[in-house]
Structure formats: C-alpha cells, structure tokens
Image 1 (cartoon, rainbow, N blue to C red):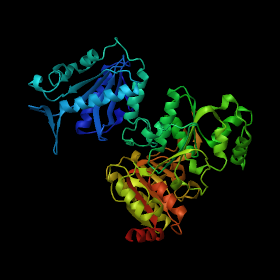
Image 2 (cartoon, helix red, strand yellow):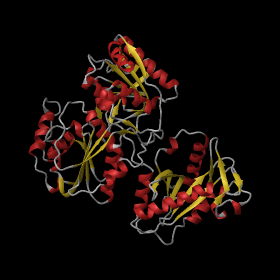
Image 3 (cartoon, rainbow, N blue to C red):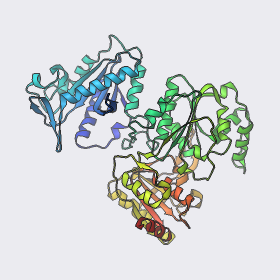
Image 4 (tube, helix red, strand yellow):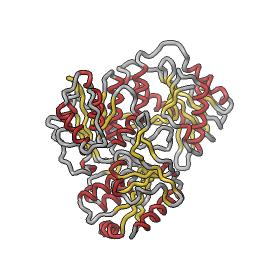
Length: 547
C-alpha cells in the first residue's frame, strides 16, 4: 500500500467533490505499493517578479520510486470542451483545466528545483475526469496520454505506474522532495490534532511563521518568537524539530504545560526529546540514581534546584533546543536550559505575553533576534472581533483566519445548578449545529481543583472524558471513559478544538488576570465559541460589548 500524507484521511467525513477525491485516494493507496508516496491536497505559493503571489493547488502529488513527481488534478462531473481547451464551470466562475495544470506544474517545478539545491526534479501532470469522456482529446489543451477520462478510469493506477516507473534515472536527494511537499501541505499539525481525526484543521500560514522564521540567519542562532494565540508558534516549533532531525541534529523540545508536552510527545518523530522543565529534571535526576518522591511537598522546588546546580555532560546535551510557552518560565530557567546546548547549537524561544497566566516577568534574553507575529490564523474572525470588544488586551491581535465563524454565544447562570444546566444546554446546542461530541471541549475557567464540575462523570446525558492524573505504561495520559472532553484553561492552553464551551466564568472584576484567562480559553476555538458566565460577570462583559 502506498504511503499517504496526511494521515487520518480514512476517517474524513466529506461530501460532493471532496468525497470523490477521498474515493480516488483509497484507489491509489491500494493500487500503489509503499515505494510510492501520495500527498493529498497540496497547496503552495510562488511570488512573481512583480511581487504578485500565485496560489496553486492540486489534488494529488505522487512521488515515485525514482523521485519523479506526478501531479494529478481530479475534475468530477461535467466538463466543457471549448476552443481554449477543457473548462470546468462553477456557479460563480470557470477554470481552464489545461492552464491550471500548466501553472501548477511550472510553479512546483521551480520550487522543487530550488528546494533540491538546483537539481532538476522531473514533474509531470495528469488530468483525471472519472465522470466525463473527452470527445476531442487533441483540442483539450493537454497531451491525450495524460488524460484519464471515464473511458479509461479503470486504468488509472497502471497509467500512473507507467509514468512513475520503479527504475530509471533517480533524483539524488529524494528526502528533500518529501520535506518540501510536507511543508507546503502544512503537515505540521495544529496542536489540537490527534491521530485519525481528519476533521482537524491545519493552520494556513502563507508567508507566516513556519515559512519565514526558519529562513532567518543569525550567529549564534538565538531566535525569540513573540506570537499571539493561533499565530503558529507550535507549528513552527514542530517544523524546527523536524528540520533538526532531518539535518542529523538532536533536538530538545521543552514546554511548561504537561498536557501540551504529552501531546507533542505523541506527534513528534523519534530521535529527539520532549519534556516539561520538571520532566527534564526528573529524567536527569533518575539517571543519577536520585528518584524524586512526588508524594512529598516541595518536590517540584527540589527538581528546580537540581537543574540549578546540574552540570550537563556531553551526553546530556543537544544540538537544537526549542522552548515553547516561554512566558510561563521562571527567571533562570532559560539559562539552565541553554547549558544543555552544544557549541554551535541553535536555540528557539517561543512565547505569548497575552497568555502569561502566572504573572511572571518576561525572560531576559540579551542578544537574541526577535520576531513578532500578532496575527491569529486559528480563531474565526467573528470570535476575534468579540474578544477585541470585550478585552483590551486583545485589541492588538489581528484576524488571519479565512473563516467568519459565528457570533459568540453567551449563556448565564446564577447558581451551581444553573451552571450545570447551562453547560448541558451549550453542549446540546453544539451537537444540534452538527458538531460531533469529539469536536467539543468543555473548558472550565477555574482550575480543576477549584471547579464545581470536577466531581462530575457526566453532565445530563453526556459522559465526560476527564484527565485522571495517571499515565499508562507508554507515558500517555489516562482519561476517564466519556464522550465530551472536560479540562481547565491552564491545562488546555496550547491546544484547541473546533467547538469550545468556556464554562464556569466568574470573576470579581475584569482585571488583567481575568482578561488573560478569558483570552487564552476563548482562542482555543477553531470554529465556534460559547461562554457560560455568572450573571454578575456577564453584566460586566455585556457592558463592554455595548460601549
């Protein structure tokens, strides 16, 4: 079976043309062996000499055993044969198929050659129109041998094999081709994506952090990224992690939040290390025969003191250190971590001052190059517009998502009983709008230890999937059996969900701390946001909206 990127496509729920593409993907995956790699839904940008950006898209890019690339454009339904060639007509426009394929092939050929250090990479194109038989192939604007129409659709796989043979002249560095296509397909997963969940949204950052920050050159390489929620910090961190592995460097990824570290450890490729600051101290301490006792008070302070005095050996050190959630780190932690960096190593520091929930001062990083991004690509525009009206701290955040989303829903409660019923109502509304239960995250504004919802295993008819604090033999967090994920703002920071219900919101005044907590919780939503707010707090928020 062919290798397919991205994973999780079998679970994708699609209709119309998208469903036809998934059916074709299944046919190609089964018909080609693992010497072939299929990239599904490839997008890229190319900036012309006059500064104009051309955006290309192709349904499938298939890399053959020799490194030769075949672009497959699928056009389902009826096509029109015109003097200018084959045309696909849509409700509001029409596309010349031959021109689209030619532009895509040219754009990809140029970028692949640049990505492969000037080595030419053979790129061909094929049109697949399974529902339409081309009558005048000679006037279609394409090589007839590169058209697979309804009359030849049963031969699609053999034709692809003939174009991408198993032997012949090979590209010297085929790994570069795969890295390039992995980048343009945005295979760096958004932090909330889980294996097999094909509905997960991949953040589109055209010309953004994952693309441009990795092009910065400085010596020594010390890059500080100050990015707002949804700007792509963790996508960049994962891309830098993969780059390090591809270059033979050993990376270390450190963050503050244990749930985030657990998630990154699940999706990070092998060859590096992922840990929280305290996990790193724990591992090093255990290697020296000093086993921390987590049942005793002050154990985390002792772990911090251990790293303060630890002198890393060469075996302890790394070629690349990536520090995420830097705004949560204590003073001195950065210096301690940099002691683990080998001479000539590279260091990344990623932070968002707006997500500083612990009130800690910004780290002093003298001599570091800084890059700032105030654009949120994850949250729909309507959600950000509401947050900007509600929270002064969010006024500088720009909307980069193409989604308009829906208005933020605000439900109020006056008692613990109403808190439960309003939370249940919010879940029911979300399901009624078409969200699956796995799409929904019920996030408490309060910490788990102070939440009135923590004792519940279900709310109304909905069973809850809650963290137990335990881990399995592979180190994965153990959750209770349930349909709706429930967690706290502090634990869910760094992740996201299509539908977020931020519940148990209650504050005495909308001060800086309250605004930051609201901002962090609200920007976890990629499609829809509901706020379940105490009546007193709702009056404060509604007064701000009315201003």
